[in-house]
Length: 188
Ligand SMILES: Cc1cc2nc3c(=O)[nH]c(=O)nc-3n(C[C@H](O)[C@H](O)[C@H](O)COP(=O)(O)O)c2cc1C
View 1: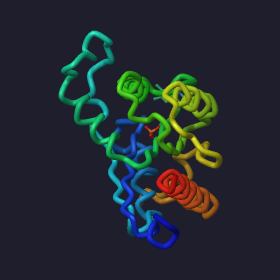
View 2: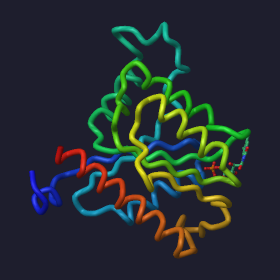
View 3: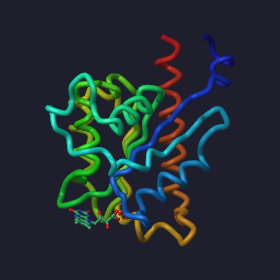
């Protein structure tokens, strides 16, 4: 498929959140990304990450738990993935790490374009650590595909929007780079 045709091709994006807190800034970030999605993008936030059982290789046989099957199918159908996370005790929150461990054997993220946003107090350690985790899954965290938003909470207003234009510009750029990466892959 070439240039103009590709622009209209439907793109499926799935987002994962590293926080399950109801008023979470991470989830606000994921919701505010909806404003930056082109019309041809179907964007779904997987918001039942806490229902995945603790990863156990013994459960990961021919018939893994149903929640895991649904989660894997969702990611399998995604052209690209967005992960937004806070930092907990200098690393990736266990709920997100657990969700990633379930993808080791099934490889849904293998070569898949993945955009990473760390929205935290500081967040540098989780940002780095998550990218190391994703490299073990052979996910494609492309150039310009990782954004660290330190002090995220104080930058969001009551409507869950970033008050600073520079953050919105960075988020918009991240989404456009993700879509560019997906289109690049489709055209191979
Ligand atoms: C248990 C716990 C540990 C935390 N550890 C860190 C940390 O190591 N580094 C950091 O930058 N922020 C840390 N924070 C702050 C959170 O990352 C910050 O409050 C973030 O905005 C929470 O994300 P959420 O609003 O999406 O739930 C921690 C918060 C909690 C509750």
